[in-house]
Amino acid sequence: MNVIKTTGLEYTYPDNTTALAGINFEAKKGEKIAVLGPNGSGKTTLFYHFNGLIQPTGGEIKIFGENIQKCNIDEIRRRVGLVFQNPDTQLFAHTVYEDIAFGPRNIGLSAIDVKSRVSQVLHRFDIENLAGKNPANLSGGQKKRVSIAGVVAMEPDVLVLDEPTSNMDARGVTDTMEILDELKDEGKTIIISTHDSDLAASWADRVYILNRGRVFRSGTPGHIFADEKLLAEAGLKHPVLVQTFREFHARGISKGEVPLSVLDFMESVDSLKVMDIRCAVAGCEISAGDEVRLELKDGMLVAGKGSNGVIGKAVFGANKGEDLAVKDVEGTLGQLCGNITVIRVPGITEGGSRAVDMEKVLGVINSNKNRKIGAMGTSAKVLANKMGIKCDIEFDVIQSSILAALRGFDVTILASGGMGERVIEKVREKRINCTSLVL
Ligand SMILES: Nc1ncnc2c1ncn2[C@@H]1O[C@H](COP(=O)(O)OP(=O)(O)OP(=O)(O)O)[C@@H](O)[C@H]1O
Ligand SMILES: [Mg+2]
Image 1 (tube, rainbow, N blue to C red):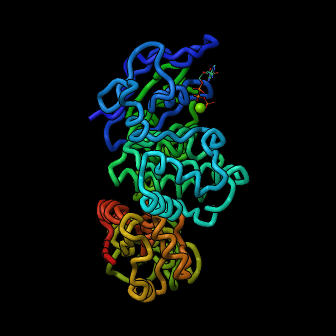
Image 2: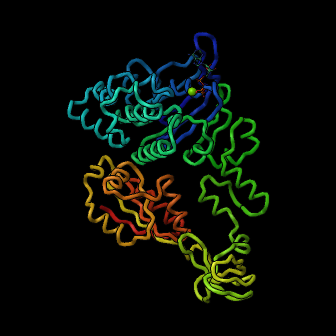
Image 3: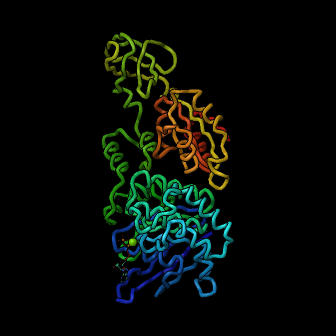
């Protein structure tokens, strides 16, 4: 079902600037859409239409199948939350708490409900420490976080975010995109604008490219970012991974589809070719032609004497600690990979980290001291923090954990709410041994 659909949408500002010149756009329920396009291409103007801030000067827009009218505009604004590009346009109260409370209060929620929504959102965005501060005195990235939190507090069905990650540091970007994923898991539709091709490639289900007030192209990230000519014409930067893939592809090392994540990229590499020249640290003295057994130790491929497991032939001799080339490998690196344990932490709406049996978590983590630990989602991170657990994996947790497992590490992931399911699904897709533990 389309939650937003525009047909030939046009908008000309009062000074006669035509910002939108016939846009056909649609967003389906539960989709994650990224809108890309150079400065002045019309992203912000388009987004203003999504919650009736401005009305088209031509064409049509339908929200939940209806035209925007006086009688339904309040309902539409409640269901479609818009986060402005510039947080200063949005933040106005004297404290962060009051700013976030304003929307829920305005739609007539009781004082108790307002309080619980605000505290939930402060927790989710990890900004409890900012509640008493004047928004005007926050840093750029903090302002952005608070302005997103204010809109999330309204619990809209569709979240429209105009450059949500601009001004944010790497931690802020990761946290924000994770929260958006969490909201998508709760059934919401998410539309963002961004100048970050890498982010759009790895995050979106569908991408729109705007140019001079028109849709230059739309499609899946796989299609859009695989099309070199299109990117050049649209003036878009190639994602770094795509560029690297092309270089590898041209040299015959990578094959298949354009990768949208480091994991996809690793899978595109022809491992047999690389295995022929792979250097491994010898575990003992080895002569040319010896059969060697490959193992992953501390994330490094090492070769020792042995004839079971993953085996290969030494190309030349080597002493302990020296590099070695191995050929004719039998077996795959997949056989050597580590296990992933997912500990499901209750999400924000289920009581968050407050509802957790910490002894049990510590028990699992302490059962193998050599594990790597990752945390995904606010309540999982808050829990890790509370328990003094130092996370080894903080960014891109699903992908980084799979990569770590592929290098032989065991990984424990604390994942909040619906994220747990997503992690397990992805890990199993990669045929990595996965155990899940519900708290
Ligand atoms: N209030 C306004 N009055 C007149 N023209 C405007 C107004 N706001 C935007 N425009 C013009 O409309 C066009 C589209 O601007 P818009 O802000 O929608 O672009 P954008 O894609 O969001 O750009 P950016 O990446 O810089 O945020 C531009 O040419 C801009 O100059
Ligand atoms: Mg803009």
